[in-house]
Image (tube, rainbow, N blue to C red; front, side, top):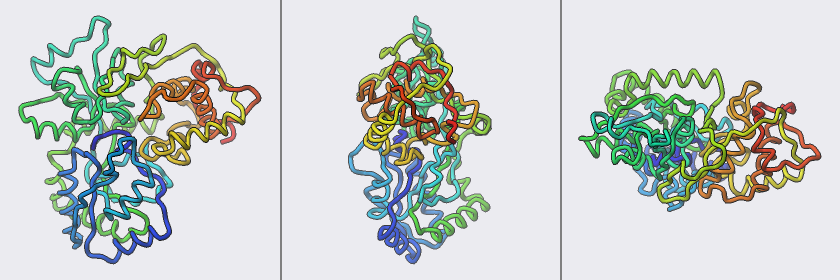
Length: 424
């Protein structure tokens, strides 16, 4: 997976009607199905091997689509519509579709199998003497951490203190940044580490768990509406492969090491205890482009924690209406038409705005959004437009409109935790 956010989170509602009938006919009555893998996925070879074994065990012939999901040259995300088109046009089932509890769109019309590989994001560094010479902080006390642009890797990396970031466009390049000395550490999708080792067997890394709710993922089979019978046959086949050891043999080289898998359980437990803390970034007095080095892209600003306001800032109805329009144009493709999460996390509900004790502040969310979003063109909007977007996010999470317009300064300076508003 070119493990961007655009490729690791879950799709929202797919079109129904004639499309559903077509998918239903193709998968419920046929003994052959077309299989796609995720674009640029480092686990594609594994996904195809598992798909062949599963479908053969289920008595279903498999053909692999040559195009693949969203294979259209567009690098700014996979929308629900594009995913639906691929399922109608090119394939009946997607192998290697990543699922995460924190990014799971509950109202998605996609159907999913049980997981066949538990994986996720890890922290890597060079192993050996060379690592010792390169894993040294710069004179300003910061080390360089590589991450993959617009992905959970980036969200996890910004939790690290005293760091500057090398943002790469693919997970392969993120691993390469450590191998080539552009970064001392990297936060990266673990299958990308496995694939890199296959291509460079002389290269060795120390691997540690990335402690974050966004680190934990499972690979599954996904298909469109009306494919319940197909998914049942897939699940039955996975159960048989698991019980006789064949699934373990297929996935052995791709599975997280035992010590890493144990750490991931800790990360999952932390997710239950508290919401994601992916906006906790380096404390700075002002945005600093020198903190970010983005390969082939403009640098994004840093993260600001500024002084306090004690209540949610006011916003008015006109801002909510304009923010909704801006969201539909620039955000819905990745975050879902109803903020439910698509190829990026949900912006509504308890994973984003819990009932109490949120670790996310309104100012932190505003600062992250205004310096890093939209992912394909960070910072493209004006301060007023970002303020209107923030007003829309506040309103949809339960806060009421008032008579005072929300300003960028008021949004940025708010340290109020983003708990669900009183309307919820």
